[in-house]
Length: 410
Image (cartoon, rainbow, N blue to C red; front, side):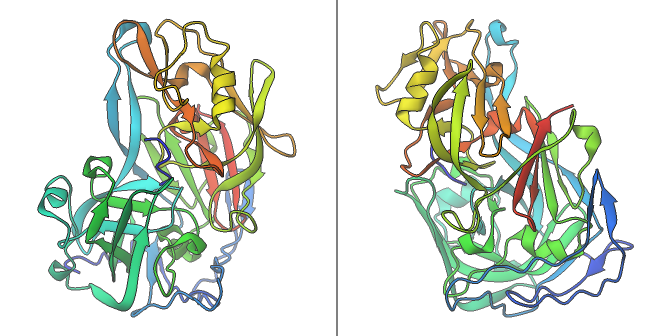
């Protein structure tokens, strides 16, 4: 989550599911001889994901990490909403954050799905009473399968900083949908600073790469990386709907969800941004006009789309009545009857992504002023593609190839 703006139960494998140990970072043992399978228009083999190493650190677990899953599975996604009450936008709602119902050690939790980070953490029993009262917590002592990872601690901050979450790390059974991972590393958040507990319902499910994991001294795999050896395809698909709902699907690309063909780009997860779904030198374009170039990250954990102030100002210069509320480009309002121009992203190699202008209206503030979803980025390094893009497109993340694909929602 790049906040730039802003075991009591161990499920048995389902019939036909695979259970194999995850042995990071160099070796993955797979008890699987199934042939390749077709998902969508692409043929994938069940090649194991081998997490990258960084220096001498490697992911060391106290107990084996064992994923159990059918070849693919889908789960419904919940959402935190902000209301828009004006008839000019149809009285519809817009999403702030996306949540997946999950279980940690048999305890119900709701995880914020975040492609902008790589830690799985849940509010624990050592957090303040106020922080615990606002969310569903995870208590390792109530789980018969929890094992503390001695000497391991996570400590992560989001966006431009000035915040942080930290605590010890446990291994436990973590379940989403019909899949579970025994021995999944889970941070138990004991210190939460600079983040409103209302931002999340239990914790954050990081979906980037192990190289961005904050656990020290040994980084740990993400839930997707742990699952990958038993999935038909090394992919997860975000199908988030305007107004809420939609789904998160693992191991499969369902072509019925989108129109036309997928557009695919390569994420820069090897050099400048070695552990994230980031892309360099993206040209922002609107009405055929080039607004400027900036790096960006595809981030399901950050609701707003952002860029440098000069790009943001250039976009709103097209709109009569647009107002820079704070004078720094971070928050803009427009007249609620504005026909917002589309915002496009032109990637190296010719790929183009688009947010329809109508999706950039966030909420009615009254007096014919509507807040928008596009504002100045506080980070000097990169902006983000947020909810407005994910609500317009089906987005597929390929963990093995480090590619991002999208097409308009059906």
